[in-house]
Length: 374
Ligand SMILES: Cc1ncc(COP(=O)(O)O)c(C=O)c1O
Image 1: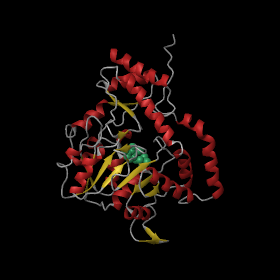
Image 2: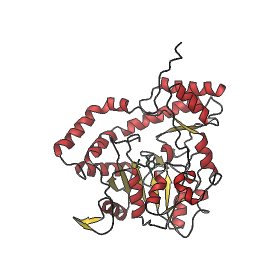
Image 3: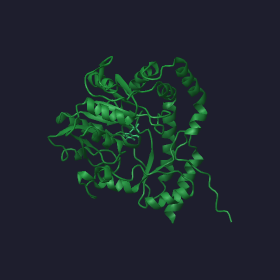
Image 4: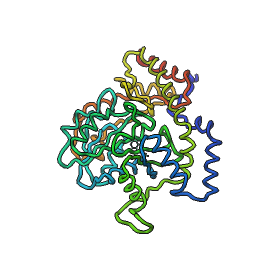
């Protein structure tokens, strides 16, 4: 006998997006093909200006990935081997590995249990005389509480880098994320709210010095043609990705509104279900819902239940950085960062994309309600 059949609800549906913008994308790609300019050309320069404007800053420097944006901006802020950098342990591994790539040491600062972002009140006990920078992550599309972090950074004369990989378009007390710290990193990884058709990233900043240094570092440390003043990288943005991103940027605010409306619908329905904690948006913050992430106690069992019903779901992230094998040498143990550890056991991200339909959201919520009655 055949089992029950379920209409799948994917975690993300990029094919639906391509169905609506495919014509514009193909025109843009054709333009790049006709120009036969593929790296560091007019499309990239235009994208840098457009993303800087969206981020409320004066400079953008296009790069090959968001990870490179973190590495190069840390380097541009003077971080080098032996330095310590403060960052949250509850993030994608790139936030930490960018620090490690420079030979610097990640020093973790626990998160707040309600927003999953860095808890500024934890900074004081983690700072040392070797601390050289702070990396703040705006996880899932919600800004970290920046005012106390910036006040701490100012008091300790530390640069702040915003890891804005997941929160392009978000804002904090009226200021766009990416405009608050000394520099910010954007990822255009395909699944991001503004995703390329491959890897790409950008550093945005108000500092002409940081912008210039990142420009030099992305191209082998060259300050003039074939004249290098320091070791650098090859992390140049390619024209095809820039042209595609410029098309998608025109749709970003509509897509953002659709994500916010989908999130409101999820929250409206989930508020009736005890045992589920929907994401919060503190007053004065604009959340862009890169992920819609709930918290439940029996998370692993719920995951299996949803997967069996073909409902997309993902844990971002199951292993906090301090417990990753990568960082075993730092000597951390369970219990060191309790809020990050508990979040890693309880969070679950539900299907979220602009084209998600109300009846799909209802199906996801019905399944969660059914599970919690078990
Ligand atoms: C929080 C965070 N930081 C950094 C990155 C790295 O970006 P990329 O994948 O473009 O290198 C990502 C995304 O993958 C991310 O989600």
